[in-house]
Amino acid sequence: PVKRRIVQYLAVQQLLSQARSKGEGGGKGARSPVVLCLVGPPGVGKTSLARTIAESLDRPLQRVSLGGVRDEAEVRGHRRTYIGAMPGRVVQALIQSKTSSPVLLLDEMDKAGGADGGLSVRGDPLGALLEVLDPEQNHSFVDHYVGHPIDLSDVFFIATANSLDTMPPALRDRLEIVRLQAYTPQEKAAIGVRHLWPKALSRHGL
Image (cartoon, rainbow, N blue to C red; front, side, top):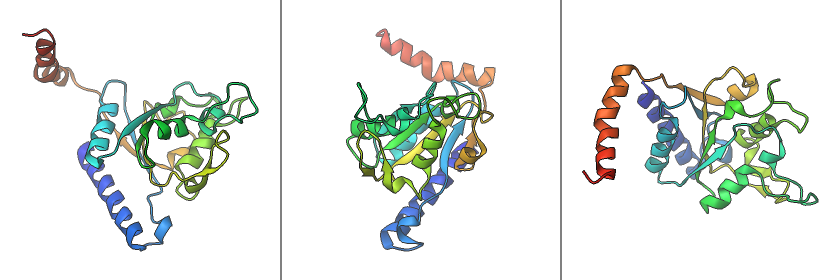
């Protein structure tokens, strides 16, 4: 079921991309309003799935860690008037990918923001993420350090989370949620025998 959901999502994205290239369905606005979000406990393969999706799309993958982010400037960037100012994490990922259309993995999105639903004394990082993910706004996202609009409409976003309980409803509405279940003991044993054990042997020259 997980593979089917992901393939269906990618198929819709491809259809929307073809519609944009032909100027159909609203042209620039013909893009999906939701972002793929892989939800599950640690160790179930969320990052590996994102890497596989990036390879299937033939795009570079950049990971944006959001765990523990409490400052809105971590997303929007710091203004140049501050000592040690730098771009936000999204723009830094674009610079590292050296392309305007990478796959950005927004890792541990549920751990960003304060315990009160994202708000903190340093702003609302989840509110800034809403602007990044909103197709009606992200074509002119302004990073405070850069100071000019940046088009994020060609970026393929994938989010991961361990739980949805700490996310505000406005952010959850932007997500196409795919839940990954934890491995059973039998599945863990099969993974160890089929994948981990052969890798361990090859690393030791056996």
